Image (cartoon, rainbow, N blue to C red):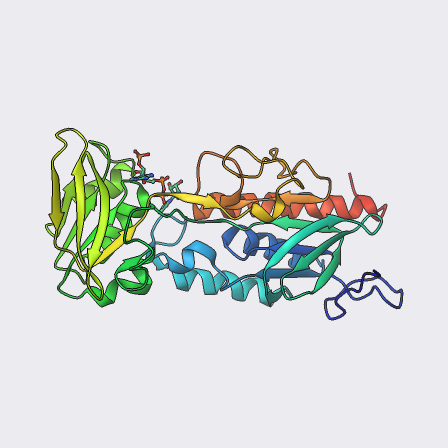
Length: 330
Ligand code: NAP
């Protein structure tokens, strides 16, 4: 079957059937992808970003960011919109679609396929698909999703004014978002499976001082129960074996992330958890495919590291394209 390419993205191909395609396709519009977009657009490349939902990725659903250098405190949505506007200002085009396949060819190009049936031919692909929140897999979690079970304090916190809620997890997200929920809830129970938190000391100290936060350590969630919405959760103490019920109306599950990389299986090398392996220049195992941000295998996942990765990926992408065109400046 002949390949037909989407015609409305820009590039230099002049054949009748394959033209007006981008130099760079960036998959995913979080801080990593948006930074790559800002840098590559600003340097004159034709950049198309394909984003599934809303630019900003996980920071779009993060209440506050207070560790991005130079910015004292900013809401996640505000920072997302600022980055998106900056990318657009330099010429990045954003398509709202979902990529389901990337393949080599034709020739030196890559082809990016989307679920809506579009195909884009591009010199370079930058993968910045980020990660999504893990489910905990207990009874009631799926039944009450949207009716008391949530992964987004910014989106759903206001529904719990003067009500008790539980947060599951002991990482940075659980502690920071738990703290944010105290603006609305009368009590926030943070349930963690160990006797101490994984979150940073600064986040812990702030939360420990908050009288609305109650830490429940060495405990796991066993069940979420209710009638039309969540009414209680059952937790079990791992040390004593004692099970108890907590009367909460909301359960916020923040137990870590899974990378959004399943569509790339077999195309680029990944670790056992599905994070894409890169070198320090953000090269993946596939020439012309770069990856950055939360979807890559690394130790620290922050907005600032995502942005840094994105800048490096854009630099490598630029050199790769110049090399193909025989105009690399070394
Ligand atoms: P995380 O650091 O992986 O923490 C996940 C937490 O959930 C851990 O405490 C873990 O317990 C617990 N957990 C995992 N599976 C569980 C299960 N089945 N049942 C109960 N508890 C479970 O995830 P995160 O907090 O979402 O953070 C993800 C990344 O984003 C991290 O790199 C973090 O530093 C970063 N982040 C940064 C900021 C910031 O800088 N402002 C904000 C948010 C997130 P164990 O500790 O026992 O493993």
